[in-house]
Length: 510
Image 1: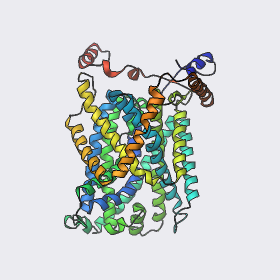
Image 2: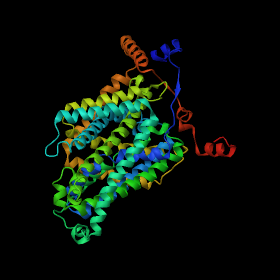
Image 3: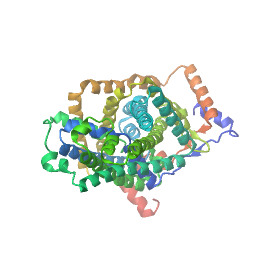
Image 4: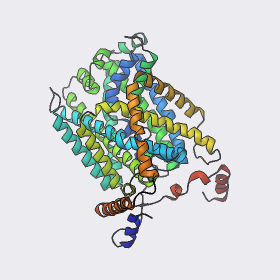
């Protein structure tokens, strides 16, 4: 028992011993978490990179469709892991359970240190740039204005997430609908152009005319660009313990959301190519704004579209804060981060310390300035974690074949994903060795931190006294305690076997 727990016992009149983590995420909110985290700034940025590396409109559309298919394969694997290891924390929780503390900590370290703060910073800056674009139509918005607006947005959404899980999920629901409406406007405009006969660039003869013959490495980079737009498909797994009936709603939400996003992304790109030439798209930095400005006669839409994209990114910030804070929460619960981050507010049941850490790290990254230089490192680390996690699924099948799995995907699904992942990662290493090398270095800096902070159990007494004092102070400031452990999470699934599950069903104890 740590010092914070001892002190709580002495002051029960001030703080309750435990509070229960609420399950407030139903099927609709689960779908909006996935869709809202996938659809962010990527669909407004990645089409240029996909077209540039693929070399033709036709191959670019094929990359988008296959990119959705690859995300679907990965999400099917995560559905099995999510109901077999029913813990919040996503990749980190699964890798820690399967491969042990060190590998799990490295994923946690890279995610908390750079991956999610950088992604949040980029989305927040995209939000401020788009919202300020109508105010500064002829120039780039001022540096300080974008930073101040981004910081205000992050602080406001952090407050929302600290105040209420229900309010945060409702914001996610509303802004996910707004994102789909913004993309729907682009799609409708594209369809109108096609009905007017402007589809010459989409005919097979023209669409597969290559400006340059792409190499295998270039095609791999095109897939990486598309995967950036699809990133976030695994985020519902970060909040598994807050999902209502996760064994049913987790896979349902995945199977609904990924095909829907793939369909919307493909139609959006068709709309882009019906509204503007490949040359115009490649010369554009804001695809959605330029395409709509070119094809709509009403000038007001050139103002509406930046605001629509800003609202899309606003929902993305909310989704990333909601899910990344649960990663800190899970890491602290496993003993890989300070125990204060594993506590939730006594009344709102929100992980306030974890949310504040995510908010602070994001603001620090934004203040550094050159966030775009970190995007490639983030993409590499993110993609690496996908492969390690899905490889863990295969290893877990071999290690514990009798483990009860409510969902059991065909082994061809993770195998096909890993083959594609290995090819893409290999060509990425060949094409961008420095970027991939720096990504690996960032991840490996967590090794000494793990051995000093986690593995070293005989620390000096003064360190433990400081931790006890800091935990006690944090509890009093934020009014937080440890949550009541869900019985499904507290009882490891290792004890569940196929025979045991059949016996439970037969006896009616399930």
